[in-house]
Length: 235
Ligand SMILES: *Cc1c(COP(=O)(O)O)cnc(C)c1O
Image (cartoon, rainbow, N blue to C red; front, side):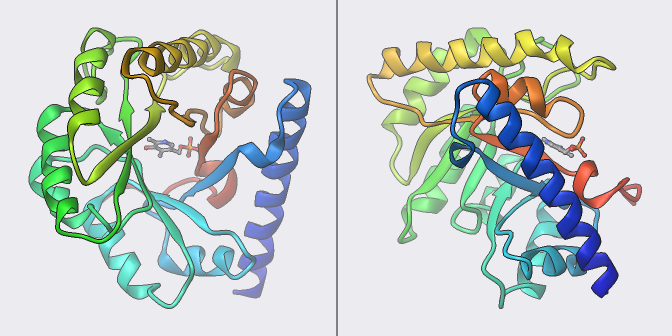
């Protein structure tokens, strides 16, 4: 386990260095970017090993798996991020248990999170996931629906809109994702003036494309494979 811990620590350090370099190149402060280590399908022991090196932000995609890991790792200081597709009937397992939900993509889901969060002490921070390329198989709302969902979410109690998230189409060449990232930044500016509030976060960039994402303004990058290695298949 010591070896695995060192391996994860080294990989994470390398990613941090590349993030910092990309940030500086873009005239940004590396401190403004949170590295979310995406641990889905990797064992809880990997999260523990990396958390013991001081890493706090972890992203999970599947409700049951995430809840199980949270139980196993309850003694650790972890800031959990929910980044996967979420059905509104499962919102009750997520509200209040994750520092940030990145993947709100419907009015129904926002309402379910709001309802559940209302009974809790802390406000649930959320991002709206936007499907910029309009790919049919991808989650996220289409751009045309963003203004009305943002408006509605701003009115809801228990949840707080803090930004936008996107998952670009897969490209072999990371530069091809750049227009998607700059578009998300423009959409955030648009929503900010629409609702009259500042939205601090842009969640964008993964293993293959986090450099252009940071250059385009990402404040949260979600990196799995670069840190943990290839994911085992989902059973
Ligand atoms: C799995 C996943 C990631 C991490 O992807 P990698 O390519 O392994 O870095 C990031 N974001 C979302 C939404 C994911 O589902």
